[in-house]
Length: 375
Image 1 (cartoon, rainbow, N blue to C red):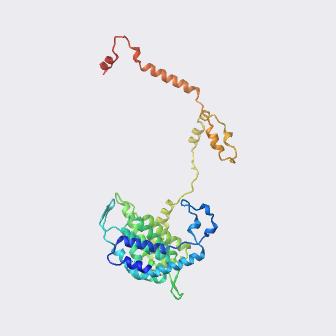
Image 2 (cartoon, helix red, strand yellow):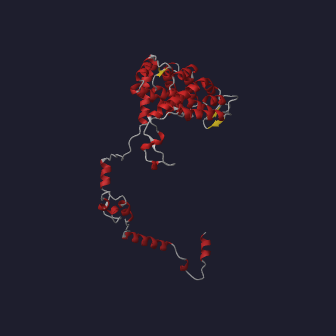
């Protein structure tokens, strides 16, 4: 079935709708969910069209193994057509140029290439040795990195490339059909042939130069580039391939390794500190002695007397959840007597300044004629 689907996708002239729909089917077949509690462990009444329990999205270890074998068979079926998918990244279906707020895209990235990059990320997650060999032979990883930097404002492709690199850095060593370990083929290719570390450093320096220009802007891929650099740092410290990544960093030239270490300890650490989400809590204001004296000298008594309630009304136990709401509805507001005096004074002042029409000086005098004379 998969072979027939692939033959239909690449039969004749490339059609974007056919290619995208076919890739979406492949992505579904390549999806691998993690094991978890079975459906019998979840009450039936909690399942509805508006509520999906975690049990509905998980599976038992036996189901996971069967699905894993299905993913491997799908990846092996895709391998003979990887050359065609790689060519789509170079020559996608033709699209007219698109004018955007940041310039004209000619050609635009297009939905086909985005879905091909998604497919490459899913195939890297499948981690099948023969398919990894094909990806290295074609140089597909190098090509998707080119698209990452070329389309600096397309966060769809940035997300897929970042996820693909994160997967490669944490993938387990592959084995061939005979069970022989073949190592970390994609990881080695990423650090050697793709000049991975050097491209991160160069992109970061180019962005700093762009931002320093008058009217310069931060490039759109910088957030994902930060995440990619963090993937390297995290995996070299305590990742499953920490030793292998550490060796690849040691193999860098002295100049590049020194720049990388300075980058990790400097700009990357600073941007991570800025992006750190602090826990939400009450603000801790530090008042000076002058501010403290002003606060203490404020007449507090007049303010709280406007409300007719006692403090102990809100100190009850929280056993009754409706209690606080009921008390809030019974709070009464009393208007001080001075408010009445102020209102009377205001009305008296208005009456003195505004002469009514009935108080004309004489019956023969026309009030409208007086108004016109004044005008």
